[in-house]
Image 1 (cartoon, rainbow, N blue to C red):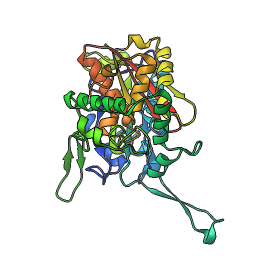
Image 2 (cartoon, rainbow, N blue to C red):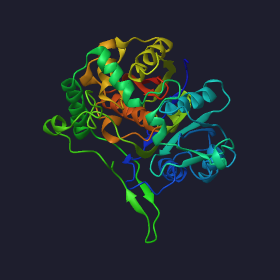
Image 3 (cartoon, one colour):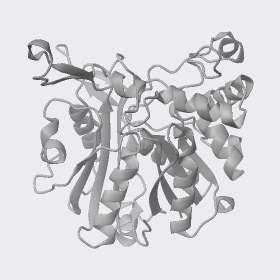
Image 4 (cartoon, rainbow, N blue to C red):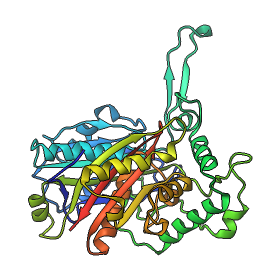
Length: 385
């Protein structure tokens, strides 16, 4: 989907720290997390123009039934409403598309896009099963079970990475090299995170930095065994579940310039999705990226920065091989392989980091692309003045 006049004002895209599951954000509902961080990110920002909220979340939380309307009301945007969206790990792209469409069609002058998830303490769903002995219910762990089996293929997400690695001939050494590069980029990069205030009996605990990032070394990676016997993916070259939130304000270019104090804006050029053959999830970011670039009237050769949601190092290797985009020009501040994967907001953080990287170089064209459950992916193209 192409957008001709949708932009993010300077300073109007943000992310919280991402924390490993069962870490410092484990006791905070994703809804509460979204309200806390978004409210702080919008402090001092003129919210009068915001007429719509698209809220993304993939793991059910208490009060989640009310979704976007609850979040808007608690942010003081009482007249604002909108959808609550879930598209697995492509939720961020879906949220950005929904918010951008409101602006592009003129339905609203500005729209708020927010995503949050807590994989910690994932709910166990209890489903009635009258036909079972004694009517005993069936259960599903909302976080763990989907990782183990795609209902359309019976294969796990790890299986999809091993399938692609095997077909493409990726070696263990190549995966470890990419992993180490991403950790080095993370350590040398800069990031502006909006702290989380976690309530407590003795006052709030402030979480201002990512939690759960390993002190990864080449020697440490080499010592790890493959997760699957005979495989190439280790616990070092795949991501870990996490908790976090991210968001952005989208509006037309003129309003974005005014809200951003006249500074250059980040134009949202396009959003696209794609699906590949069964159990080949790491391949999906490539056709999604090509579709988004086509909609924006750009080529891979026009890109200055690419960020990815890469739950497996396999993803970035495949993207680089298929598109020719250099691995070392991807993810200049690290990626979800390093700081974790709260599902819904993961892509939005990557877009925030993409905009920051483009601003740091003085502008240019950028792409975010990332895979999602069901062998799908979402992609977003932005241009920074």
